[in-house]
Amino acid sequence: MKKEKITIIKVGGKIVEEQTSLGNLLDRFTAIEGKKVLIHGGGRSATQMAERLGIESRMVAGRRITDEATLQVVTMVYGGLVNKNIVAQLQARGANALGLTGADCNIIKAHKRPVKDIDYGFVGDVEHADGEMLCKLIEQGIVPVVAPLTHDGRGNMLNTNADTMAAETAKALSPFYEVTLMYCFEFPGVMRNPDDAESVIATITPKVFEELVADGTVSGGMIPKIENALNAIDNGVKRVIITKDDVIDGTKGTHITAEAE
Image 1 (tube, rainbow, N blue to C red):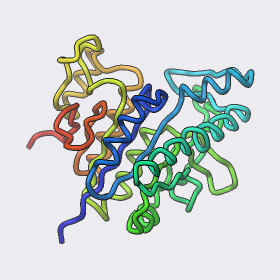
Image 2 (image 1 turned 180 degrees about the vertical axis):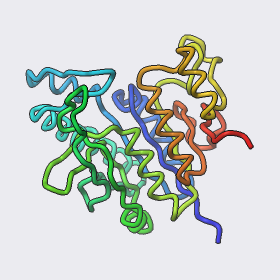
Image 3 (image 1 turned 45 degrees about the vertical axis):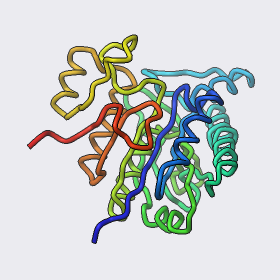
């Protein structure tokens, strides 16, 4: 039997931080036909709130060191301020949204990242995403809006990379739906030259990815984003696209695919 389609949108970067760009993205998200899930970031808002509270934000290779004070900030900002703002805006657009963290309904469980070269603190590496529970919510006409927070099953919240949460959610839903995963950020796709809007790389396979990393075209936070995308493709997700806000037909942006046969 053919699976019903579902679209999972991960929105981060400047798009989620600025009301105009967020509003435009939510207009397009609402216009997507069929079932859908939204997963969001909010790092800049967390950094701004931490600064207002006198809490230093420490980053290593683009990843936030999450001590106890920072965990309180990201829980408030991601699970509260950013999440509920998105939920309220989706309700205004007629989407019956429900804001969630990984702890709610036990949808995403993680463990605290082991200390190796760096102690990231209360940062979670995903162990399990409950696609069946998410499916139950979705089948009730609910649009899940998931904040980048998980839990460890022992009462602790954990700060978790939103791109990873999107990939794990997509993988968990793939047995139930034909899944399209879209990563939306401030650029129109993965670009050879960030200053040239026409330099979007149309397709990235594992081999192309290796070449782009080797020559420095892809670096920093884009590396784990594409790694998550490739992992999703390898685990049952139908399509993965990195784009700005072309979420309705998915013809633009960078398409992440397995090696051509």
